[in-house]
Image 1: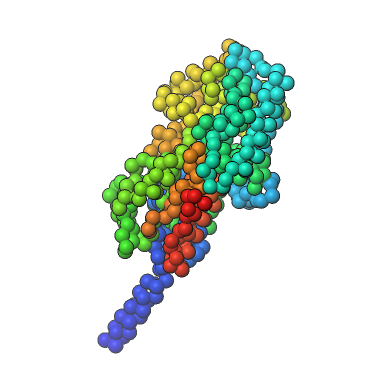
Image 2: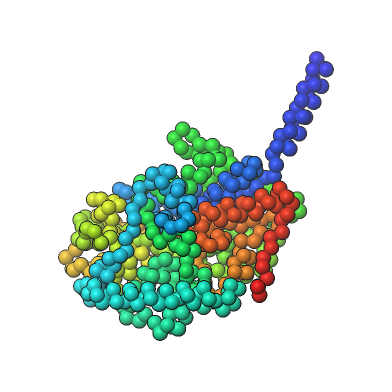
Length: 486
């Protein structure tokens, strides 16, 4: 019996040793948005499976999130696959097709026939088209200027400065709404703050194609995130993630690191230890004090993070008892030209996406988003109704419901996506994604070419994870950032 006991002990010790050797390094991932999930899968594929994902909310997907409104699921955040039908294949488009996500080509070609005056009535098609053509011509000139600037970024200018150089300063309501559609509707910030060199031309459209597709699937755009998550996290027969390596409602508040590893503390007092941590929260959150670091992040890192912009893009949905807006081909998108730039400017009707729902979407950004987030929804509804009555007459029905997302007010997001501002060059951008010791960073804001986009979040997760994998497997952990002057 004693001999058998000794053999049993030896076997157990051997098994423990094998298990320890097989375990490999441990990694905590902060945030289960697309970049966090993408990074976790990349680590898992490389054999690093001792991972723990801590997510502050009750769901994965982050800013790709559906909600029920007026009996249909609509997207609170990301809604389009942007960059399709080009030379390269957008990985999100591949996933959307694999999942057979219901999507619709967004045709903006007929805006010249659907632009409304503040005082009522439509602008003449020819008048609007003239403004659009001039804006497009200036933009094309801006592309040439942008590509001629030194790659260091030292001579970068704002989009507005470029427009001024071309003697084009949009100032009438019509010029301003076309300008808004061209820039703010894409970047969620005005041309005066947006970098020319890093947004014109835009890599997303240059590489993946000019077309964009609106996802309107009742399973939600978040299906692409679950699609990636299901490839490495254990799921039930119903598709629910039951893997203990994903912990929801865990708000990370403190990250400390030493030579021996990292310690992550959550709001509920839980403490988790690992060899490395991957921080995938938004740059908006990194600009707040939600998560404290010990030791404090170095000055170069803080400066890089604080200089970049977290923009706000607000999609306001309105439900009506019946339709009163034009339908048919070429009517999906329409513009409202206010004397106040960015005041309920871009509208969309959903006869194809949500037939019979009688829902309109209006998009606002930046300062209007922040203003609207701070007022009651009843005031927002009243403002939107006033604009609609200006466009379609006083006899239209009152909206029966309104949905106003509040991404800026949400401490777990502090905005919707990053925008590249004037004054941040490539050197400083590389510092945003550079690791600090055992603390790595990912998120759409770290994507080298596609910040602000869903594909940017997905690809950034892969890139950041590969940086960590290289460090773990080769011991080469230093990230080289090109000198500021080169």
